[in-house]
Image 1 (cartoon, helix red, strand yellow):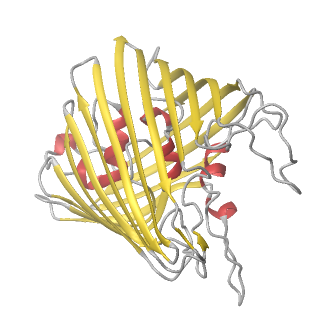
Image 2 (spheres, rainbow, N blue to C red):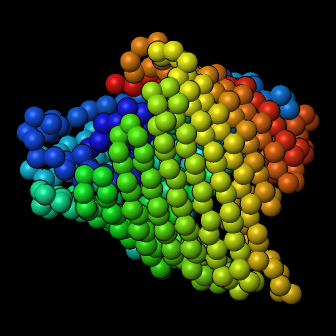
Image 3 (cartoon, rainbow, N blue to C red):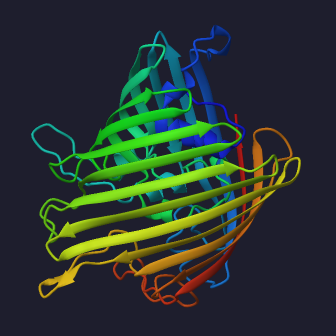
Length: 391
């Protein structure tokens, strides 16, 4: 399924972006992977928020969001098969991570002998798809199911990213898509992928329209990896005040392995949505660096910023697509130790800042049920110790 690269980040990049088509471009029988593989991972962490929020929540952080608490982030079991050009994958999961990133899932009532659906139905599935590979010289893999989003370089499994926490870009942009896609190996380095999906984070579609996605990737292991992606579609709920606007997303990132010790990465994302109130838009960027200090010891730094403009006219204003603030940003420093294969320990400091009060600190008003928690801080600092192991 996956092309093996030196950095775990690039492994994730290939798996999410192009699927098993890239891994099977070489006809050499000696390089043919086993027809069935079983793997898995576990993630756990302790985090401390220096704001000391009384509700115990580190807001808008997704998967490391509990203050002064040990937590199970995610536990996943992954089964993959690839035989006679038939490809399939089922990856099951449970933990705080899936319960968080499925929060935006559509809720649909049932009737007429048909069950309804919501996040509780899908959150235990990280990936599930089946496909068939056509051709050998330039293989074309056609597959359908639930896929992790190829938008951006970071991934759901911690092991495939340089930091423990994810950037604001990762948290704001889609996590998964349900639909069909086709990935073509143009050359050993270039892969083109086309997809048709329900939309952003939609196992069940929230409107009658479908979304399209096109991606072009270039990969030279231990040197340079580049992705360019477009996604477009109607993402507002049916009957939304914004109408049925077509949302345009343009995403690109590049990973440069400078030498055996230093790797650099840039990620940029822009988009716009013409709706009944005008044109909403956003622009976001993240910069990363990772240094190998000695064998098994790394330090990684990341800085990101995310701006969003909300369309407005005399009739009102469009609702936010991403965050309840005009901009958010963060700075992250992560020390990682890998004392053995398949295990990683990370100590991370992160500072979050926003244009308005979206975080929690001290005595937080509200109970989270009958009365929502009231944000009272523009910034937060956290220290996180996390561990992940896999097989």
